[in-house]
Length: 174
Length: 174
DNA sequence: TTAACTATCTATAATCA
DNA sequence: TTGATTATAGATAGTTA
Image (cartoon, rainbow over all chains, first blue to last red):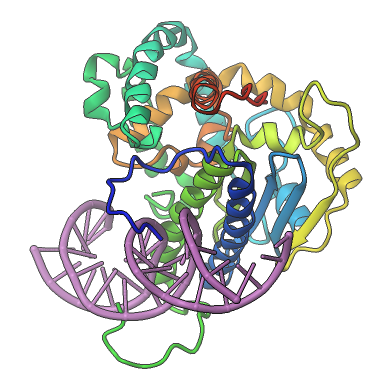
C-alpha cells in the first residue's frame, strides 16, 4: 500500500481524477456495507444517500431509503406534527418543546458566538494543515474563552432532559 | 477481540440489549466517520440518517443533511435532470419524485427552523466539551442536523484548500 | 475501463480499569 | 455505568493483470 515509509499527512482530498473515482467506488461500497451491518447488528433503520462529484446518486436503505427519510421528516418542534417515529415510539412533544424554548432563549447570544467562530475557524485551518480532520480540534485547543456561555445553559438543559424524558430512564440519549 | 478461536458464523443481530446499544453507538460513529472520509477524499455529498432501536434519530451530512436531501439535483450552475439513483444493499430504487415531494413538503418548515439553528454551533462545542463528536448530538435535541455558520465556514475553508491544492475551482457547496 | 492482490491501515468486540 | 486497551477482523491504496 505505502511502499515508502513516509509519514502520512493525513487523508486529504485526492487530486487525481481516476484515483478519486476508484476511491469513491470502493469507499461507497464500504460505507453501504457498514450501514447494513449497523442495521443488522443493532436493529437500526438507516438511509444513506451519496452523490458523486459528477452528481450521480447512490442510495442505501434498511428497510428502505424512503421509509427512513419519511420518518426523519420535518423538523421537530415546529408547528407541524412531530415526525412520526417508528412503532412504539414514545411521544417526543414535551422534550422538543423544552428544547425549542431553550434554543430560543439563547438566540440573542448567537451573534457573539459567531464572532468567536472566526477564531475557531483558524484553529481548524491549523488542524487541516496538520493533516487532522477538523472535528479533531478539541476543546482545549479552542480555548475556554471561546466557549459560548450558553453552552452551559445547554448543559443544564441536558440535565433537565435526563430527569424528564417521557418516563424513560435517564441517559438514554447518551 | 475474539477470545475463543471460533470461526465467525457471520455477523448477526446482537441479542444482548446492552451490548447492542454499545455496538450501535460505536458503529454509528464509525459509519459517520467513513461518510466524512468519503466526502473528503472523493468530493462526495452525503446524507446519513440513522434511527436507533428506540427511534432516536441521528444524522450526518456533508455539506449537510438538508443540502444533500434537498439538493439532489445538479451542481448549481449546471442545468440537468435529477440524478438517477443507483440503489445499493437492501434498498430498492428510490422513487425520486416521491422523495422530492416528501422532502419538499417540509422545506418551509425546515427553513423556519433554520433561524433557530444558529445555536447549534454551541451544541457542537458542548458535545466536544463532553467528549462527544458533534454528530453525537441527537437530532431531536438540535432540531435538525443542520450546520449553519460553522459548517459554511468550514466548507469554504475546505474549498480554499482544495483549490490551492490542485488548482481547480472549488465545487459549489449547498 | 474493471478485477484481484496484499501490505498496511482502520474499526471494533471483548475485556479491563 | 463510561473510558481505555488491545487483539483480531475488516477495509482499502497502490499495484498488477
